[in-house]
Length: 268
Image 1 (spheres, rainbow, N blue to C red):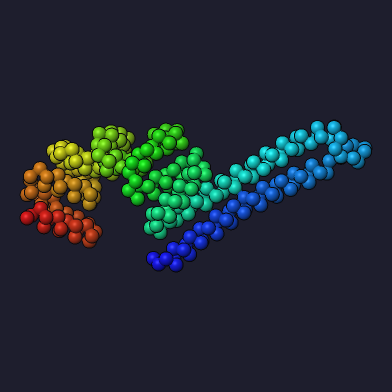
Image 2: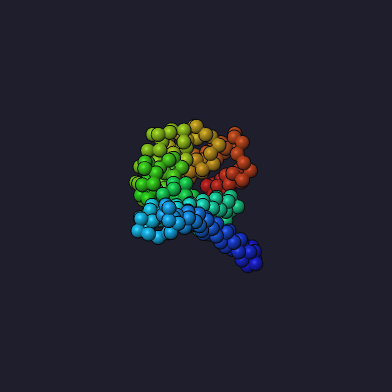
């Protein structure tokens, strides 16, 4: 993408932000104008003269209403701006723009840090950018916002980050909890196999990954992990057999090419 295209995209983002900020200011101004008009119309009964001590006492509730209206309109403006940033983040993620995805999600969280959806968008963006430590550091904040343990997807994302950081025992604890909660949710099972490989517990890894393939024989990552565990254990023949068995199942062409490359590596 050229420099001009990037500058044009930034201009669009700026226009979008300015539009919502102006909308927020107009909302505050409109509510304030209505309140001021109401206050200005007050008169002391029977005199037609404003601003006596009694009139000022009567103005106090209206002043409070005005302050509350301004505060509410201002906060409503921030709600709208945060939602716009969040939706922009989702849109940029779908377009494959990880940096813009991250920046928009970050703005949404900064404006409204109490919304779980905004945090989830931010953690997904950080994950796609490989910010493993940052995702793990945000775990307490997300748990506070959620008011409970994170769901399967968010917890799995944290476990993957712990794997990349070499914090294997913490990652294993999360994958085991997720498997107890839902034995058919395979991503944490496969991740557990990879963690065990990293810990050089090849026999355990083989059993875990085989259990995953018994449920879903066409999972590419489980196949690769199992073959790799056998290879690292020194059992090249078994590693090649795992890869040969993939011909029995309808793997995508890209996966088949990957298996062929691994056969060439393991068969040397």
